[in-house]
Length: 314
Image (cartoon, rainbow, N blue to C red):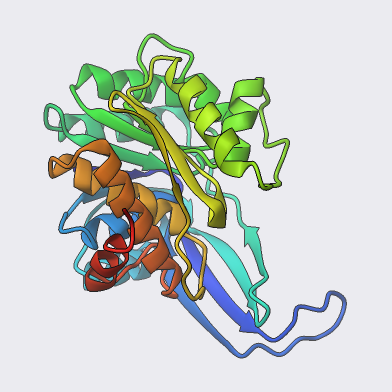
């Protein structure tokens, strides 16, 4: 299994009682973690008895700490360096549970550098191997470049699990090749179906799972093997060759919700690669996501806790 991270970041968690704009606030604590959505997904994989090979398109400034910290976690990570500064994401978590995220831009990447990265990933890919690619892309890598990567993975015999924004996802679904699996949230899924280039409706609502299941079925009709549409605390819905279904959300104590969807992707793909049927793999993914919310590190989850939460899903 491969996890491909095109736009890594350093997540800086800042804990504070209340965020009050325009004044000097005192923080209660802070911590930094190497992140990026595919890195968080890799943590979810590792909580499900899988050891993905992580490939990161990594700016050189800040890369030493980033790589050293991931390798200290035991992660198998390969850097593809290019000039620039590793971006940062500031995550402000208040006592009330409200979260504010300030995402920095990635270092620009030219077309040649991106093609070298994509070629290197495809060169180490095994036939029928799952390839997770999640998150945003750095400046210089547009939707057409992602469509090319989708085709390259398909040509190399890989199975691409993709989670990205509406504009990029529309490009990924517009070519002759398709991802094998996509996992948009409800707002993203409805925006993709509406032909929008950005998220339009952000509310969940009482009808969230009905809308999520409808969106999953309609997206799968576009030639994708399997679709999962997540709906926050309400749960999720899916559509695959096995049919369609839904799961209500698990109730857990929330620490850091950032990376929960990525942990879901990691748990789901790890279980699919291990041979689980789709409905069971989805349940393991949900358990991984819920366990990750209880941790500070984005996407990290305790394997025993994942198994405990999986037992609560029927």
